[in-house]
Length: 224
Image 1 (cartoon, rainbow, N blue to C red):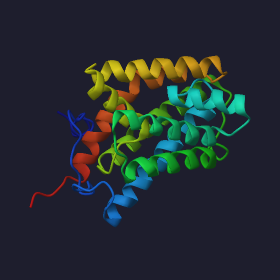
Image 2 (cartoon, one colour):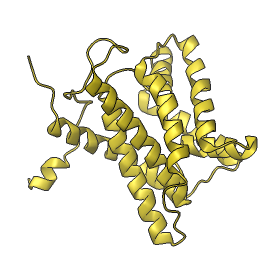
Image 3 (cartoon, one colour):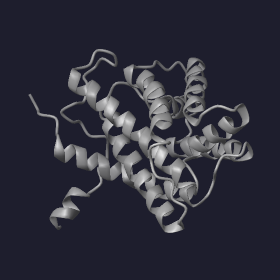
């Protein structure tokens, strides 16, 4: 295998890194907190790239976009409100939030509103597609960074795992069902669905897996 292929080899599971927290979801080191915030900010930036590409967004951002147009709010504001509603759905599922859950709600929403007006908004279809691809790759890398912090899932991930545990339905099917429902509601409300949405659906899983492998090789957890 070439050196490039080695670095791009996807991970099979969520790896442990040098910044992965221990047992507590609230007491974390400065390093873990910095990586957590960086990962969440990059996640919001990746979503902002998809928004500015204007050829379709990720399912949850399609919903946020539709709500923003309906309620006359920003996408960041509706992303925040959506996250709060999803978090409330944790109550009957008996899920407990962690620091990562709270920071996920705050940082991603802020990053979307801050970065969207700063990023380019191309009108050429090739440039739009490239920007959407960069957005998907950035969301994948960002996901690997904040998930490996191990300080609690984001609201949407917690909903997925909670439904899986309560219903016994496979995680993949639960996630797909949630994404389809969210996408349909967002589209009906006027959210942008298109080639970017398809690219996200096709590539995000592999993007996260490759990013997991990358961060594991860059900063593996030292055994004591």
